[in-house]
Amino acid sequence: MSLIKPFSGIRPKKRFAKQVTYPNLSYLNNYKITKKLNFVNLLNASSINESKKMLQSLNDKGIIQQDQSDHFYLYRITYNKKKLLGIVGKINLENYDDKKILGHEETFFERIKKRKEQLLKFNSQISPIYTTYKSKPNSLKKLNYIFKYRPDYNFKSEDKCRHELWVVKTANIEKLLKNYLKNIKKIYICDGHHRIQAMLKSKKKIAPMIVAFPDNQVNILDYNRVVKTSLKFEKIKKIISKNFSLDISKKNKKLKQNQIEMYINKKWHILQPHKQSKELDVTILKKLILNKILKNNKNIKFVSGFKGKKVLENFVNSKKYNLAFKLYPTNISEVLAYAEKKKYMPQKSTWFHPKPLDGLISSRIIS
Image 1 (spheres, rainbow, N blue to C red):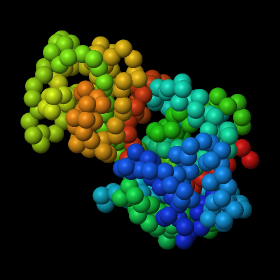
Image 2: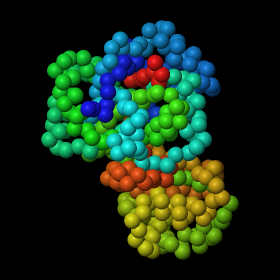
Image 3: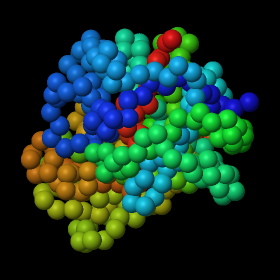
Image 4: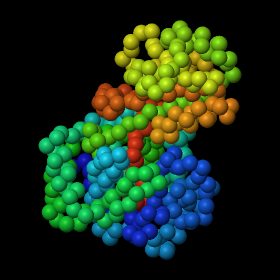
């Protein structure tokens, strides 16, 4: 029995696909809300009612439409000559956290509450939850074959990635896909923990839409922090020096695992722990530095590695924040190991890149 099931997806008409779909807001610079009918404006409208009106307009104008029957969907993302081969379908929440569908990250109560309200009022999931599964070289050859025919959608988006989507309609491809899916015994939630928790807490019969990528294709970027604190540099340095050596960073020298970079007073410093630890770098930062220099989490902003080092510098140089911390990316093997042990990483430990677009494939939450 496959963990991933077909469903009747909601898709834009081909000629509208590029103009109405959008990457996650974190990929966009200087974004301003407009009246245009697209999913970035829809997601960031002033209220849920306004979002619902925009979604209804997309439906009424025939820009998006729901498939009349259930299908699997294939989703390929290409970036820097690398490819992610995704399978889009629905999962049963009853399988969550029982050794078949596993999460790895702590969540924020307020964000779960907000997501729950959005999902139930909006009754739509406008992008699939990003998941992965353990794969083998032989099975990947079979997956590559399934992706051989021409996609229904094929275009470059604002995230500088090529996005392709297939609607699986032919009987022979569907049969190959179903046989492939039988070998996926566990699914790991990568990005979308708050949405999953919101669905669980809704006490409604909801089947989340997911995209499942092979683990050896998944790419994780660093997820960094900028911080506002009232402490002076000398005090911060004294706190850090108890557990780390602190030196000026050399230009163009790449950060290594178990090292942390800190930006303050227009200089980058490399922090090397005195003792080797098996804990995640993000956990070490939280325990040994952030918990000691901050009174609460309200003074932390999380910044994706996609934005680059310069953005961290700009946040601090603008004086909105005092210092920035850059981390080495978490490894996918660490993500799977934490999920297997039912342990949880700190919030915002991973930034998965690239991600599926908002609006290319959507689904109803409650039929």
